[in-house]
View (cartoon, rainbow, N blue to C red):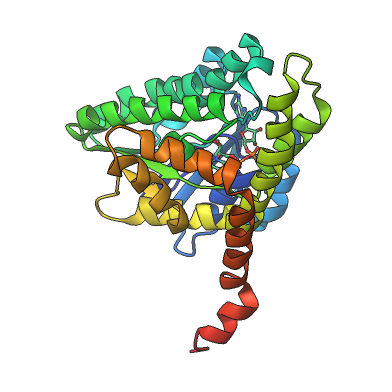
Length: 317
Ligand code: NAD
């Protein structure tokens, strides 16, 4: 149980990736400022988290079952928390989907929205009344750069993250009146099971509805470029956990945090031209006409961001 002065943090989707590492970082806080309620759909998947969190389990971290897609699961989880007291809610649970849209069933579209959008709304609805009564609270959402800028073949996933951005941007205004902050964390690519699941998803699926030309662009142009982008620009889940903790610990937590500065120009491109054509046409040109240049730029970036080069250019002290 939380001790007086400790902040109670509830995190969704802690069996892997970003959620797991946020839970570990907060539970291992040297000053023990946080009491982490790490939640996951299936507690049988707790081993990776328990191994990473070590002795903090049972002291600054406890586990609860929670499926963000179920009203009953959310309500039971929140009810089981002492006084329903949650200082910080971190909405991390999420699923991805890459595919030409004509090969995606409406059931798959609904399932992505059920987790990434309705799951977040369900969680926020459950905690906001108590936060309002206490006139304190912080709601954090692990969104994505794809909540600000669409990416080819990620149409459904990007739509779900855009939806959550719109929801939170609107809600943040009202909640400020109750001293409740809302913060969006917007990572680019991150090396987690998310990336692994994406590759598995594509390799296991047939695309009978897809015409040969689209399938060629998807499999032979987009996917290799996507793998390159992950390899070159990908962050670790620990880095995202650090960025999230930093946002939590500033006195006036910012609304929006792009964790990867290399993505700032991509978002700026969209804002720079009100017609929207600049970003659509530039991204099209980059992928379909300048594939070679893109590969070259990625390799250049790989060299420039390479650890051995960095260690040579950054003074040891
Ligand atoms: P991940 O697959 O390792 O983690 C997602 C977690 O959400 C898993 O533990 C999964 O079990 C859980 N989850 C899924 N559906 C759930 C449900 N209904 N209820 C409860 N938990 C559920 O991937 P990750 O990269 O750690 O993803 C975490 C968040 O980060 C997601 O919201 C994702 O959209 C976002 N994100 C990821 C990347 C990336 O490249 N990995 C980039 C930007 C944003």
